[in-house]
Image (cartoon, rainbow, N blue to C red):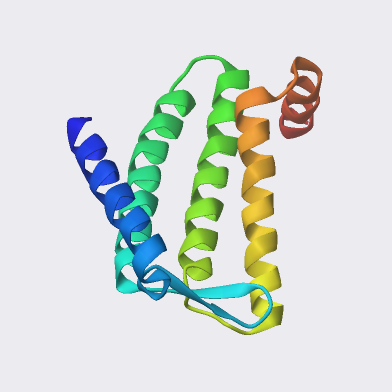
Length: 136
């Protein structure tokens, strides 16, 4: 845990410095709704995405080991949300600049938010319906 605090504080310090002295060291705007990240920002994005992926998979795997079918269902939604978020975040970090592909990537990120929502806050009624559909 302390390593995350140190890395985040260092990133924030450099980010604030670059923000006021040379914003191009963070990113440059390309087109109407895209940015090209610098190596500085891209390295922190990769670190963050890797952290989310590793801890998210561990969390989802533990949820799917539960004897409760509802918790298993939540774990599956969390795993799908983690994977779609990480995939969308990697692609959004700068691999594609075509506007159509960017819209698809952003839709993938939106779907990950819905999957997270279902994984953490699914209602009992919806969970029962989904579990009944699966067992039929």
